[in-house]
Amino acid sequence: MKKLMLGAATFALMATGAYAADDLTLQLKWVTQAQFAGYYVAKDKGFYEEEDLNVTIKPGGPDIAPTQVLAGGGADVTVEWMPAALAAREKGLPLVNIAQPFKSSGMMLTCLKESGITDPKTDFKGKTLGVWFFGNEYPFLSWMNHLELPTEGGPDGVTVLKQGFNVDPLLQKQAACISTMTYNEYGQVLDAGIAEADLVTFKYEDQGVATLEDGLYTLQENLDNPEMVDKLTRFVRASMKGWKYAEENPEEAAEIVLENDETGAQTIEHQTRMMTEVAKLTAGSNGALDEADYQRTVDTLLSGGSDPVISKAPEGAWTHAITDAALQ
Image (cartoon, rainbow, N blue to C red; front, side):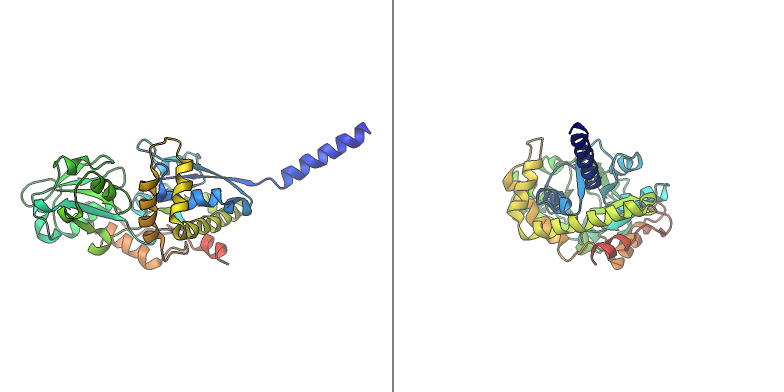
């Protein structure tokens, strides 16, 4: 009887091991918020579990470089903006875009109307503009070069203020314009008591210099591994299911994000508004990278004059292999 019980226990362990979900770690670009709702929804709704995946979602932050986490083996996939990804790739890190949930850019400059800025081509000269760095400055610098505006200051150029991840420079009138996202910092400006009528915004999309944001990236070595390719395919399929659910159910998605925010810093009102705006950026994407959007991003980054973000057109920087398989 004892041998029979041991045999049954062994069989149970083998069965458990045989059907154990595959582990996969996702590194986010920033802190837990509705910008990443699709992934939290996919986990909460069991979409990853349905694909036999055990997904760990690691929040980002001001001291976390997603691409470095990926390079160091701390994650299998990361969310990153394409300018930073292509810059890292040119420096030797073999990042590959495997999916592009965000179809549109949410980046813009938000200016005080009292600054007198109505047209970037003529009114940015001599002004101080707030800019995020740590890889987020690339689209801005390309835009300024497009306008033939030096970024070293002076009456014929612009003065770049290295902006923290807040809206203080605008509130304190240290800058005429600051960097904002449609789904986040712009709302913070409004919450601070500045009326929309007192603001002027310039969306990168409208200026023709938008670059792709919030794509999914992995290392080339993962794409050379059939088992990892299978895991990535299932991950992308479940993630896009999560994104579409979040688009259709913004309030529920915001609640799910809030449940995963261990800092307690977020509010349901802010996250619901954020999710509503983020849904406008993921709308129209099935996860597959649009080659025209990719080329526009590359062209923008190459137009940096004497100091371009990348010095040549990348090769092998993206693949449809994962999304083709996921969308079957």
